[in-house]
Amino acid sequence: AQTVTQSQPEMSVQEAETVTLSCTYDTSESDYYLFWYKQPPSRQMILVIRQEAYKQQNATENRFSVNFQKAAKSFSLKISDSQLGDAAMYFCASTDGSQGNLIFGKGTKLSVKP
Amino acid sequence: EAEVAQSPRYKITEKSQAVAFWCDPISGHATLYWYRQILGQGPELLVQFQDESVVDDSQLPKDRFSAERLKGVDSTLKIQPAELGDSAMYLCASSLYDRGTDTQYFGPGTRLTVL
Image (cartoon, rainbow over all chains, first blue to last red; front, side, top):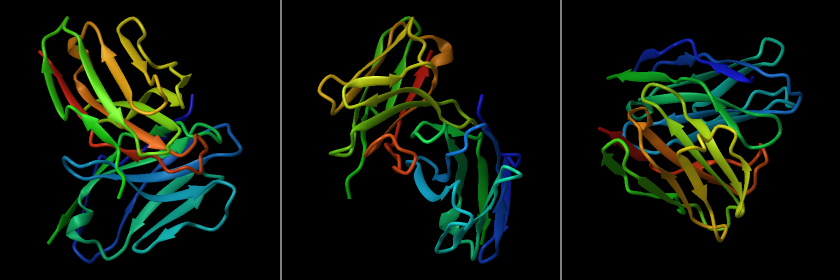
């Protein structure tokens, strides 16, 4: 069965600093997509960034970027210039093949210190 | 900006009672998902609809859970009877289609507490 593992239950970063959240996955599929979702306290989950597995180039969205290592099945999220509003649960997710079903990790709770 | 609507936001019930959750996806989204998120865990898929058809309900406990999307628009998830272990957040999400490229948009969720 496909699995997504986030090994850091909690992380903390100083405002304006950089933090990296780790994620590994296990799939036998050749075509799949990887995501990072953010879930702020008592608010809905929103997409942060997406990576197509067939693309070698790492995805970037403003202050958010990923380090996608396909051979190692690793997909880490880097947040630069951290802001107080970045405090949230972050979930790594993978599609179950080329279709839309998402397999989520257990999440990493990110705290941002002023 | 269009959003996925869910109601109620909170539900407290006693075990053995029936509960129902409602979801209205973003207009035009053909694919609708119901996830269950236990506290401290990531969401897990319960059921996926493509229009009005169920395409994946392999993780849905069918002895007590049911889901429908009669007209291919809004959807209802029902639990009967509720058990203590059903306490969780129930999330609805929708996407344009069910391709991996299609972003899933999540609603605010229904937090269920079973006493």
